Image (tube, rainbow, N blue to C red):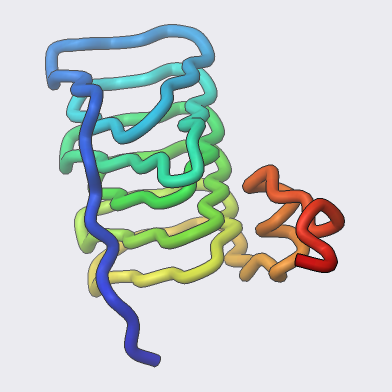
Length: 133
């Protein structure tokens, strides 16, 4: 299958010296080089997460698109696109629409491709609303 690579727009930067404790919700794109101890939710239809090589998330992640290069201890839900780099370590399940895994990545968990109905539900799209258009 051939598809266009996702372009990531970054609105927020969490630097390598920053640590966030507690669940966090942001809108738009986020570049994470630091640590988050808590769930991370990225709102917005085109919300994105780019995790640097030494970044850490200990909690669940919910996002439209993600590039994972660090360590995640928790489940990930990505309803558009997720790319797991070769230096990534994920200890948790991944629910995804499109998944790309690079050689060397370590994943300890289940992979579950989302159905179109699940994607619409997660993304907040109401299929009944658009009927008849």
